[in-house]
Image 1 (cartoon, one colour):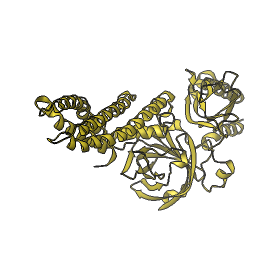
Image 2 (cartoon, chains in turn green, blue; image 1 turned 45 degrees about the vertical axis):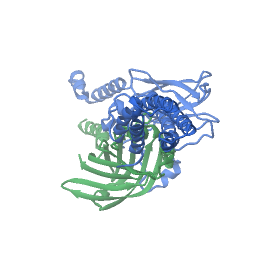
Image 3 (cartoon, helix red, strand yellow; image 1 turned 60 degrees about the vertical axis):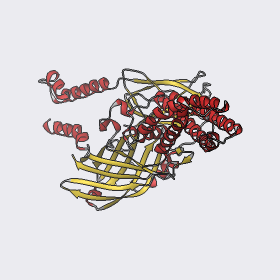
Image 4 (tube, chains in turn blue, orange; image 1 turned 180 degrees about the vertical axis):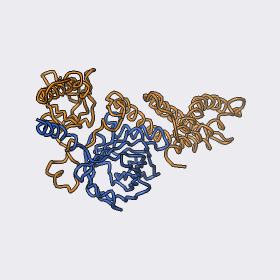
Length: 179
Length: 308
């Protein structure tokens, strides 16, 4: 009876053992988009991203979400236009999903395939290079996502009837720590 | 919790009964979690006409499970869903597919999500499954992957607000007209200033004064339209004015009154000049007031155009 009980308890416990091996939490982040206009350049910065990584069987799934409204370009009028043009009130979050091998945590550079949801559209960017640095138990990741307005079917905002350039590269600077 | 229930209910029972008890308690616990939420709304064309038989698909961001419903003749639909985060897709023949990337459904208040479909070929922006699978490290559909609910974002941060989007759309539309009208106003404004040198001196003709007055009148009318679109553009609640737009707005407090005062003083000066008098009294302020007004208008224009 006791051995049967042990088997049953082990079977019941299986889902617990099958749970995630480790997790990562986004400690701090700076995301900066860059917009080019014939008359001037501008940047919008957000420190409002939240992220989590769940590792299992040697693979880690990461999810990062940043509110569109958290980007600050230093001009409230420009920020409101950006929210409007990117349909930020209707789709308030930019989400980034990626899956990486757990071993990448020790690498100095990684190429990540990103699935980005923004402005109601989902776009994949393949092999986006990121630099990885380990600093006192934390992992610092930097890189540039080569986003464009047309990828997300966003009409380029214009100033004085001149539209901005299609490229809106997003500079990523994130610090992750294992949980 | 489970342990506590079993400790109370399963004291002194043999192994098999213990197991049954665990299953029962688990079932109780699961039943408690699966309260149903409701998402409903109306699918319509851009003109507002209801779209019948449109397909509405809700995909759980947390679990990947899908549920679909079709709209009725009045364009309405209803989906009963377990609470969670969903991605919704609205599809209908002859219309572009509309996607809502994130909607939170809770078990207490029905969520109303109306959709306006744009005419055109249905286009799905979601990458094909084969494309996803071909990626060496494509996002996983595994249930262990983190979901938006894991990130501790507030409801306000995750839920779309179609009304606020409509407000922003209207604001941008009006400010675009404001911007264009401002640019158009600049042309007669510069011409009015340029022609003023022939209108106000000692040896000037009445034709020059008439032209100056006509251009000034045109400038005033166009300025009025420009100002209307800025003043009537909807305000977005909770927005603090920051950056160059503050200077742009401050300048309006100078060129706004100036644009009213300048023509009044101009009419007085015009009458004095036509009567063969030298411009005198308050009318002599027409020139400096006009210069300050034009200067403030130009500075307002530059403040939003060029980064200082």
